[in-house]
Image 1 (cartoon, rainbow, N blue to C red):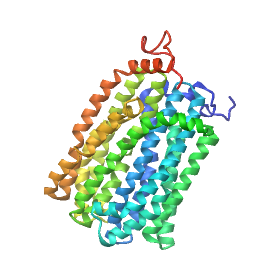
Image 2: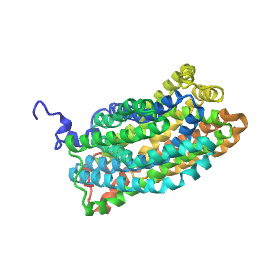
Image 3: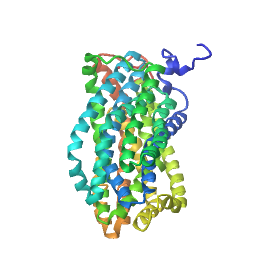
Image 4: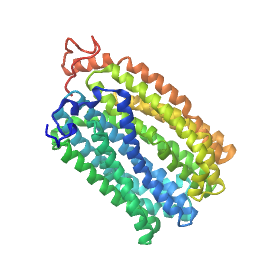
Length: 482
């Protein structure tokens, strides 16, 4: 190795191929989660920056329009998150098993799947936007403003999907730093472009939508540079690889998409319920909706950050490290949520002031920061369990628990809570997640005990007999080709 070459650029080295199969698990969790959180903050910061600049225009219906638009656009983002989970899982498993060629094939075909499916989502969503806004309770000028915003921004969704997928592939490789840079580029570009398009050119909310397009182009370029030039991670997508990798990709991808879509479904019901109390309440919910992913970015990033650690160790058949990853991730999530809850409780007046929130909007922000924010302790547990479900071969559980959370854990609680106004709606949303957070962790650890048998069965099915030091018989052994 020359002095100018870092270990992560030596593609043939064992450490570079499977960095998570050795060393401190907690250190890997902290590194992956912190860099993932910074990247997520950058993505969500685009929405916050948009909302902040729009609030400076002094029209409350503009903030409400952003709230409706974001609820719908979250559906499209959820698809890309689900597909990114699949791309990361199958690529990281091949890396953990030491099969570099398979990793490159899977990375390339994952990008193809992301592009095709993202385009199909755009084609499906654009015509039904007015209907979706009606379902959410948008009316009059607020509805028209929101519709125009989405008609400009949503066609760029494939760019976002590819950028997120590239970031996920870098995490699969173990390069948390550059994966963070991909998503961090989003916030940086938005910080520069938003004021230019909104105020400099005088385009207002439409300028914010146009800025989103350029931000996503920049994100894609950064991701391609790191994945192709730095890591040589992307192979040439051949028709045979696209066909052969489709099943393992979709086995994880479909449940992961369904899992991710559950969250905006639940949020849509909350938005429709809050809309009954007027645009002020919707504006408050829009602010809370931006505050949650920023404040709890590390919790939101846990699922994607922990996934590669689980997949690499599963591919390498290090089952004890898989279990240790779960425990360390849960502990991290608990401590982080408690600290953020305290911080929000202390700073809520300044948050309301920053967004010029008044009356119902300010009351919702206060209630969330003082009370509802604590429910993220259980949401964090659900996210960690979902990471295991998606990456270890039982993704259907993540679909079950997320949809349970979004329906049984939202609708009845929110319906009852409406009797106490918009604050009651938020309270119902928060309380509903407790049961599903606990149950998901219980089921997850039950399934972890079955991993050695599951891996053994996969070897037999693939025609790869376990070696003498197989983890099924001794706790750690050679990995099978994937």
